[in-house]
Image 1 (cartoon, rainbow, N blue to C red):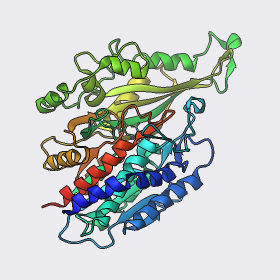
Image 2 (cartoon, protein in one colour):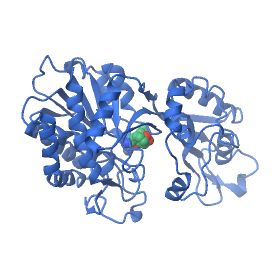
Image 3 (cartoon, rainbow, N blue to C red):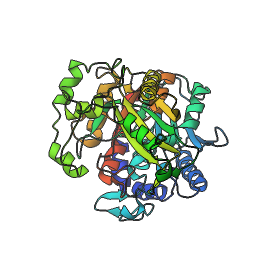
Image 4 (cartoon, rainbow, N blue to C red):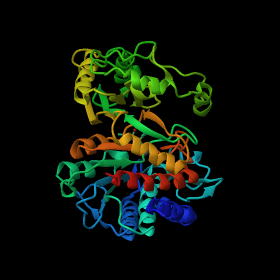
Amino acid sequence: MAQLERALKHIDAQRCAYTEELKEWVRIPSISAGAQEDSTGALARAADFAVAQCEGLGLRAEKVQVSPDTNPLVVARTPSFSPGRPTVLVYGHYDVQGVDNPRSAWTCDPFGAEEKEGYLLGRGSSDNKGPCFAHLKAVQALRAAGGEMPVNLVFLIEGEEECGSRALSQFITGGGLEDFGPIRGVVISDTSMYGPDRPSLTLGLRGILFFQLTVHGPKQDVHSGLFGGIIHNPNQLLVRALATLHDAEGRVLVPGFYDQVLPLSRREKTIYDALEVDEAAYCRNLGVKQLIGEPGYSVLERRWTRPTLEINHLSGGSPRTVIPARATAVISCRLVPDQDPERIEAALQQYLRAQLPAGTEVEFGNTHSSPAYHLDPDHPLVPRALQAIRTGFGLEPLLTREGGSIPIVTQLHQHTGASVLLIGLGQITDNWHGPDEHFSLRDFHRGMRTSAALLCALGEE
Ligand code: BES
Ligand code: ZN
């Protein structure tokens, strides 16, 4: 029996034991974004857990403190690389979002890791501990199956995906990947499947431009009866400016916003047009009456291939009769190939300034960005990834894209020159970042199988 077959049998037999280990990881409240209290200890423990897991796989693993104020980065590798074997880099993140979204909306303990009707409940179960763990356990199974590991392995498991990936980004730009030599492929499971029993290879992620815009007014909040009528109100200036960002049908009106957008190839359009879309199910799941968006594009084109601009948060003043000192909007654009985040940022700043009266004090801050990622459907690794999904799931995989962003993906791609294979194991209904996050344990199982098959496939000539 071949190594892969033995590994698959091992995974099938160890499924429950591996699930119990995953629960331990999910029980650690390693919140990096939106923590109510200090999470430093929990982040360190979640990183230690990953290090111990990697060591258990015979990898050389360390918790790297890239700089004093960043969360630890877990770096693990096969201790000595076999020169004849390709190297594969697997990326995941152990940090999770906060649980106050709102906390009262959770019907389970966010860090209880309860199992219910085939799902593991808990913050981080799907984004991203469960999918990341599937790769670790696939390596364990390949080891248990005997024989040499089919590839040299590098695991990068970061603790800052949800808050900007600063440590990993510094690690990469500081030459951290150079020790590993050429990389054949990067493997990531931090996206979603097309649907239940619809595994997919994700060909693209949208990029992001995130920033905060503050409009300043009087030096402090002042009485709106005393001074209303003689000074600008920052709330009003801000909402008027924001109201000019889109037309009534949802197109972004900022000059130049669409200039660099590459049209979708006929090949990809055909692939996505063939996917069925149940608009009523979207409406039901989201609790909305209808879907909207840019005219002339299908729902999937709008979700995956068109750029957007969203106002994520507004604040200013208080619910009293005041004219506030300042008003702030948090805005993010999702970017597509070949939009350049810096060009979009400049265009937006110029446009927004022009929408405000001359002399208004405006501040842009908290900016971070990364361009979109895209993999050619004809890339030579695509058939290997699809075959691995077939082996893992026993189902025919789909080719998709995603609307979300994993900012480090582009950097990993640029610095390794390797293509990134995005094989999501979660569902868009798993409530990432929301209450009652959950992860299908059946997909955890099929994900471990897929990963074992993929590592073998990537090891082949
Ligand atoms: N796992 C998601 C990325 C994702 C989301 C992929 C949706 C595919 C579809 C990741 O943890 C995430 O939430 N990323 C953030 C990044 C942002 C804060 C820079 C996102 O997309 O909003
Ligand atoms: Zn996330």
